[in-house]
Structure formats: C-alpha cells, structure tokens
Image (cartoon, rainbow, N blue to C red):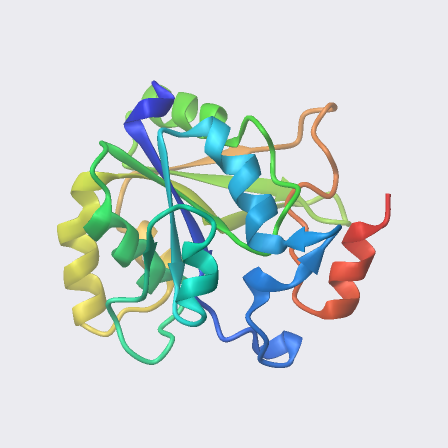
Amino acid sequence: MNPQDVTGLILAGGRGSRMGGVDKGLQNFNGLPLAVHTLMRLAPQVGEVMVNANRNLGAYEAFGVPVWPDALPDFAGPLAGFLTGLEHCETPYLVTVPCDTPLFPLDLVQRLGEALETADADIAMASAPEQDGQLRTQPVFCLLRRELLESLVRFTHEGGRKIDAWTGSHRTCIVPFDRPEDMPRAFFNANTLDELRQLEAP
C-alpha cells in the first residue's frame, strides 16, 4: 500500500475524564504535547494527517495540519472521530490513532496495510499483548477503506457508538504486533497523569 494513499487521523476529541477533564492531547510528554509526538510518529507513515479535536482548536491548528471537530454532538466517543475522519478523507484509506499512545509502532500503517490487502478486508485493526501475554485488540488503531463512510453514517445515525459493534459488521482482520522486536509498551496509553509520567520513564 502506498503511504500517499492513506490519510492519518489523530483522535484528540475526548473529554479526558480520567485525567481530570484536561485536554489530553495537549498534556506535556517529554517536553512536547502528546499530540505532537503522535503527529511526528504518524506523519512519515502516511500522505496526509489531520486531527479530530473538540476543544482548543487553535492550539491543535498550530501543529500545521487540518483540525476537525466531531460531526456528532456531546463527545460521542472515538467512533464520532472515525466518522469525521472519513467525511474529510480524500485518499482511499484512513488510519486512526489516539493522541495518548505516543510510542505506537513506526511500521503501524505498513503492517496494517499489508494485512488488509492480503485478507482483502475492509478494516485492519491492531492487537497487542497485555501484561499477561494475551493479545488484545486495539480498536482505535484501525485502517479503514474510505467507502465505509456510508455504513458508518447509517450506524451512528441509528445511535450506534461502539467501535467493535460497527467493525464487526464488516470484513475485519486483526493484525498482531507481537514480534520479538516489537516494543512491549508500544500500545500503552496514558489515561491518567501518573500513567503519563510512567511512560516518560526510559
């Protein structure tokens, strides 16, 4: 898959409830906002990047990429971000990453793309080992075909909000990131300020 055929979407539209209501993507991580780390990691893997945010839009626009708020009201969750991304995506594929997982793999898009094409799937979703060694899906790390927009519009307008419920209705392949060289903390996301400080530790 040609990286130029993929638009990257950084999901930064949540309430940040478990972090005390702060705008998670703007929290400091090793000297820069979390979302900047995400942008720097994602940009080399795709043709374009945009941000889904619902607050502090000017701060995100200062990153130099387009910023789009949810099309759905009331902080409707990551699927609202997926919908916004697909509505504004001008490439055949959209890849989604959250703003609070700054160590995600540098070959994320390549591996999701290879799996999607091999399986002739509509969606490729990452999975990664938990501390107990069991693989767990990472639903906010998804590669989607742009033509899924109509399906997602219908699903969300009918009140659907759960990613798995929607992806389960399409051909979805799960892509394990459990190779020996894969970083164990690659998909660790910071939900609290304490977890963010833990991630900063070498």
